[in-house]
Length: 236
Image (cartoon, rainbow, N blue to C red; front, side):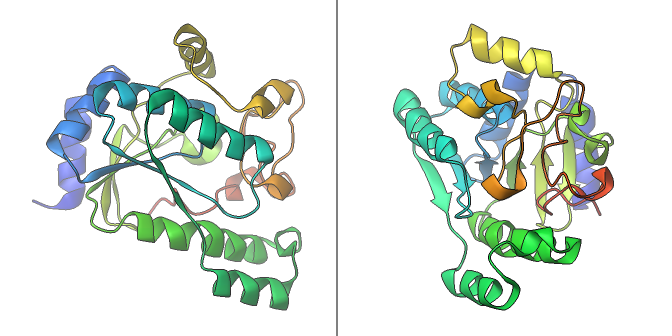
């Protein structure tokens, strides 16, 4: 079957179901071939909690770009110990990082969108591809409400770029639902969320947001909203 058609069929079948049921279905049907990519954000922590209650052996990984907040590293350790799971950590290629920094500068991303996307490519996209090796399905914590770049995303999609079925179990959740879930289940979360950081990425590319701002306003804030994606969730 055509992969895109398969994704459409699965979206019709699973869209609207509770997030736990969607995750349970994928972890069973794609056993050993479904992987959860976590950025340790609030949504991803909710999914980690759900997955740990369904199948502790499910693969969960995160990307260490080398520019993360100390609070993010603390959360990786805390989450792993709380749930008794292994969160795989993938790093960028050191030679690629050295070449980029020595030719473009340590904070090249502020100079142009081209430079910023180069940095995201080396620090995120390349290790992401290694993490996806041998996988058939990619579990994500995306929500439509997060930004204009995500408003048309579906529960299940075909990711042409990575050649994977992509599932977004929280796609219809509101921010309030996420936080109610974390508090109800006592799920650990990044301390920066309490300091005005609704979305947390690399330290130099993330700032706190002001009241009334979009939840993604603190990510690459010097760019237009339409370009504020790192490429992990590129739409074809």
